[in-house]
Image 1 (cartoon, rainbow, N blue to C red):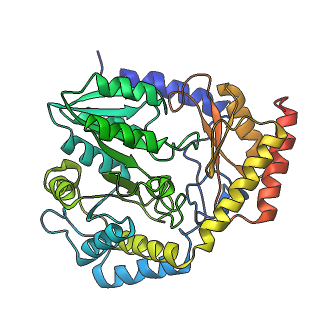
Image 2: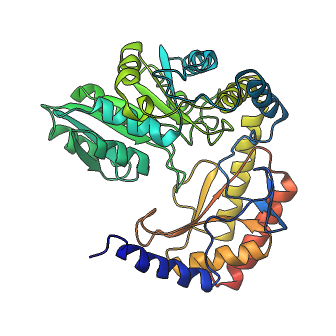
Length: 393
């Protein structure tokens, strides 16, 4: 049997979707990630980006990146563990620790690597990783790389979490949840999770990739949103959403972070984050603190869009964040609607199984502080037009 045999079947499936005009992956953007983008020579409204605060094209962020390249060059030529540890890496870690009100922080080259490294380092042979069924793929993969056992509980189901904790009383336990769930935009029910963790001697790690720069009075994420910053043991996040770059971090106690720093394989055996990206993140953190009006505007836009979709009769699930799903429950209808929206100048993301459970197929829309009232009105008008055309509303 040929190891490449599986490629033929998948490639045939991809070609079939492509030829039908319903292939909406790897779309080529020809402009900066902003509220409007150029795709194949067409200007469309971007209603599918994780650039929640609109900082990827911010002048201060770009200026910081340029200055970092001028001083440190384009790359680090090695792992931080050996020759690639720059002073700006350590400066950023200090800034992240201060921002998230933790003792220490550690920078990784990607958000995915952060979860792979931190989780696999912490969950040992006699430990259990307890995760929400809807947790991000990087959390699942981090658990797979560990030597511990993995237990899933039903999405945001606190009773099911308690049953899982009761069944693992004699083990070391790390509960890992997304702060904001990336497909449906709902928030982890963190207060009872933390309460149960204390009762059963478990630690809590929050993946706040979509919560940083979105939730909390100062944009510090889900723990700040619930007033639980001192109760959550580890806060993980990425730079590829509100922080305008790429990379990741984990923040927590000095002891836990120092342990991860010296045992996380995905950091030790990967080249370090390039200087331009480190500087971009640092500048983005400054802007979040200096311009709270961005967070205010993001939530004004979010409320407008949630209300607009609900008034039209679309199913937005339990979303309460700038990630607003339009749940359709049919893969082909999702692709058809995505196509019609794009033809009318709106960029959204089609999401089908296995990214969501069968029957929860959806269009993932997401909004930025930099969307104008006019742009948002146009998005709603187009959804209304296309929804009626397809008989969905």
